Image (cartoon, rainbow, N blue to C red; front, side, top):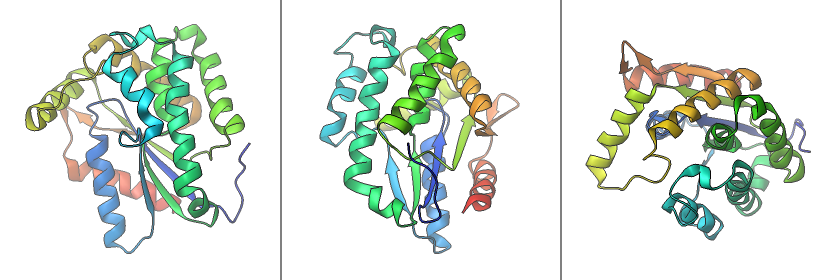
Length: 227
């Protein structure tokens, strides 16, 4: 299992359900760090343009079933973990091990939320124990130093996704189409955040998304404490 040592870098993850504003905040964080002269590596999962994400694309397209529950959480987790393993081994392993800063848009934490949502509450801890052992011990992926969990609610996230799709013309995948599934993801995310001590950023105030700049400043202050 990967253990922290003085020579290794820092791993910072932005996590949240679909429609949480995560991608926007990730780009803002990168821009701010660049403006201040920080050197870092950007890594976004899944890597849809890479061969290692082929099975993920099939899964999200509905080739294995139109409902997320058609693929059990352990099998689906493996699909995403393989993409992360390939990325680590071919892209940023040496950079990280030589002290580099890695900024991640999703990571193992996404399996905790999205696949953990498929597990009944009484079995959720067993699944999380398996997940972290699989990715961090067996696959030897590095553990994050900071996970920023962007907390939202289903009504707000649904509005955000609809707005994004109307602007881009993109189609919803099997996750985004299923409001009940997203609600379970949110519950699983809350459980994982509490259990693993993720830093929760509350993105909703008064039934609406907080301002982008307001959320960013909170995120940036937490990141600066780590780097």
